[in-house]
Length: 112
Ligand SMILES: [Zn+2]
Image (cartoon, rainbow, N blue to C red):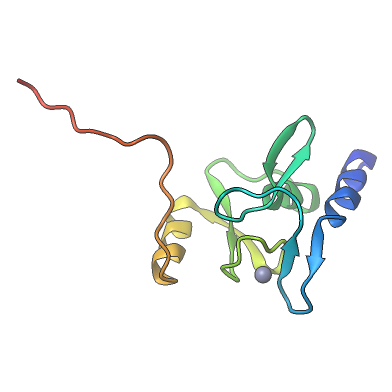
């Protein structure tokens, strides 16, 4: 692990809260739905993605980080896994959450 990665992990650790259970909390910025955000290499991104990339390497195209614990604030590595957007949406449905939608509302074009 290179020095910038080590520094980033040390800085990230200052935001991670030990809740006394298996999941961790986060004292830094989050998305409106509670996902930790972290500044790294000139960009603010999901902390879970940055953590994964530093520890395990590049996240393959089209893959997302899924929370096995269903706790968006958690950065416990053993609670995170790679998966597809479809798997992540299925997690949301099976756990009683509504899957996230991205982008703007779509309308169907009709011909006159
Ligand atoms: Zn967790």
